Image (cartoon, each protein chain N blue to C red):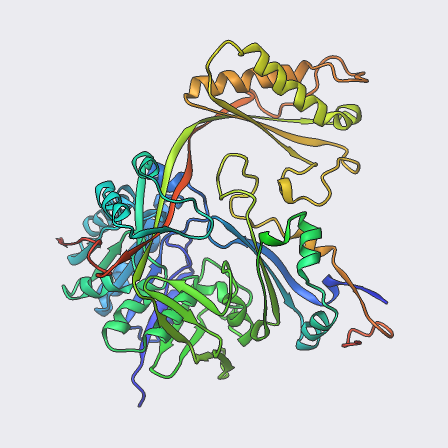
Length: 115
Length: 454
């Protein structure tokens, strides 16, 4: 069955990492949720490219960070922070496309790990 | 008993404030140092370029007053980095002025060390000529023209200039642009504590209570450092540090949570462990520091690009909303046509809220299908304020009366919330230097001055 990312993540955020990069953090609710997301390949370069309409070379890195039950995605900013044409100087409102992510699980939705 | 070094981090950014009760709870834990960083590049290039703080003067004075009085009373140093938000000369002078005011008003006598972080252009050009400067991230190669046009260029100091300043036994250190962890880590490093743990603890303390749950940028945090580990604890009963809240903070604003580059090397946190000691104390161990050879200092600079005028309006007409792209294109053409015989260099930009105003090119759904109204910011940037005014005014009046296809409402296309409709946003800057400078002496570029205030 289909489940939404917001069922298993309690923080989804974006922020500048220096003026040239934008970093996206997804913090999962439990270790099991983190594991579910990893196994379901919730975050892949292809999905990030599709969600943000960017080429793969604009992705600087995708890193899993188990101590925080987190996946971090860092991409190039379209322009350097504050350059003419800027829409979000702090980069704090670039997370919304991630809220639309969903994944397939087997079995009934129990709130437990189901994969 | 294990040798410890205890630090009270007052607030995430000087001027963001902190509850007195949290601060006193920190003092009751007998800190060896009170510190805060005062800056960030997050608010964009304007503040560095214009020499203005993004934090409020009264708010900064309030925080400093409490910190300095507590430090003097307990005979422990107070350290503030990235004075005035960006840490160039005008920012340092602004913050020093506030401290002198506090000393006079509160009748305090103390010794202060100032550490300067603004670079002379000749110094940068010499280093550039010697091949000692390279771009950071995607910054373009540094050129003489970029150096010459910069309003201010600062270097982000590591722990070394602070360590040198501590030789003078100051009561207060006020520094220009600093690597945030330096203000916390310098004194323990000078005293022989483990550099990696001191820097990693500083990296978390610099955001104060943001690493607690619930997080806050306006509350204190306490750190205890030994040579085997460090511990963090929140000082406000309304929040608590957990292994997850502290680990999660390691992600914040960083490209990679395992490798954190800074002056003279990087922190390697791949073997880092976070453990809950009970009582809201989170212990961190296993942090490593990998020195870089040569040592590098990050340079930041901003240059003026013109003057900005903006006009703010909205539209509620479904046909205008449908025709918004064509309307904007027509407005651009009309402005270009009217002034085609002028050799004006201007930039006209439209930010359309309800379409892609927040995400611009990254917006996955740039259509206006679900929008029943749009917010429109017309932005003109030109070489003088008067020219920006002219371009903005022409764009605004053209857009107000433009006859887009299918138009039914012929009295005006825009709803203006304000009169006047157009606003001066003043001088505009862009980041023009974001580079690494190689150096053999990490403290040499940062001049130290001491003053006895009374």
